[in-house]
Structure formats: structure tokens, C-alpha cells
Figure (cartoon, helix red, strand yellow):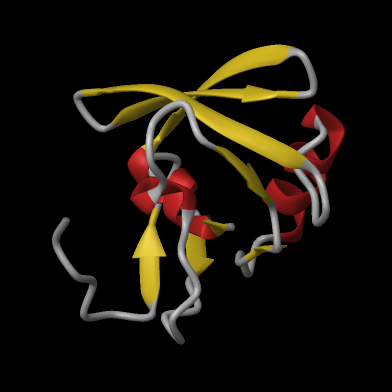
Length: 94
């Protein structure tokens, strides 16, 4: 995996995400088919945080990366499957 030099990322929708690089792993660094507990969502966009919350993506919930294809992550969250881009996966701290 490439390391990220900046603490700010831009996701495909143009929204900025603030990523904590203090040793915490993000979902983009997760192993496939291993269950993780979400520790935090690092985003400066409250609308994005609220959207993720409606999907069930919040602190304490479990998430599994099912596959990675072309920087798209298929995740399992609350008995549902979602496709998210790499930048969004980097905002989800596990």
C-alpha cells in the first residue's frame, strides 16, 4: 500500500475527508474477509457522516471488506453489501 503524505483527501464527489494517520488503520488497509470494528469516521463533511450513519457505518459497528476491484471496495455492513471508493474507505478507521 502506498502511504499518504497529506492529512486531507478528496473523495470522488469532491468532498474533503480528514484522515488520522496516527497509527490507526483504515478500511483501505484492511485484509479481505476479516471482520473489523469501526473506531471512527474521519470526515470534515457532516452530511457524509450522516449518510454513513444511515447505512449503519458508525463507531462500534462491525464491517468486512469482501473484495477490492479497481479501487472500489465491496464491504459487508449490517447484513448488507455496499460499494465504496478508496478515499471513502480511507476515512473509515478500524
